[in-house]
Length: 260
Image 1: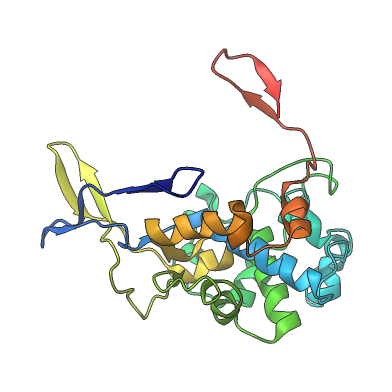
Image 2: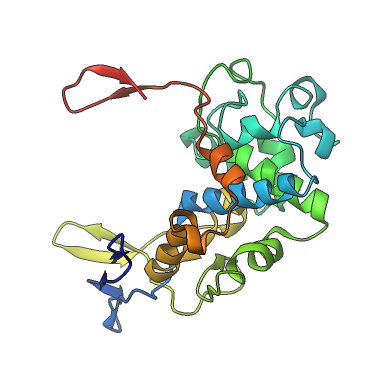
């Protein structure tokens, strides 16, 4: 699916290909719902910044200030801002092959229970000295949001973002409630031949990766960031997300190592 508009907003384009369900020949549309994985983190980040703007969360506050159960030797050193920018020192986490290979990977945990078991490892670097992608860090932000607001994350997501943008086809996926209009997942084999994709537990991803949305809703979400007249985030919040925290080595087409 594709959905975009010209900078003037006068013209727009939407295009869909393929099937949302092969067996029923249901076509994809701009409103077909797909899991959006780590794009979920964008929504979590905005919710945190909204609470920071209201004084309920301090970006320089420590994890232990909001989650008393978190291990003190690291929780008293990691800040909310570092969790947002993946510079807290938390290592690569439960997406690793080691986690998937354990019996725990198939056990259904509640959000805090999961974080207590898998999201309290020793840090692999001093906070703010290294960037390392962390789903656990984002999930801690979700638990902090629930702690300071007293509201479940999915309810907060709707109240503060989705309802404000009038987005009806997005939200958190649930194991016990199939989403209407959702695409069926498949695995492609040689032939070509397709089989149903593996079962995915929606609990573990939480606010780091358990949302689903549509091309149309994500288009409107991007507009809410980029178009001043539609902006849902303050200039201060946008600046806080885009500030350069650390330079990263990357490989470009010339195969030379650069920084960005």
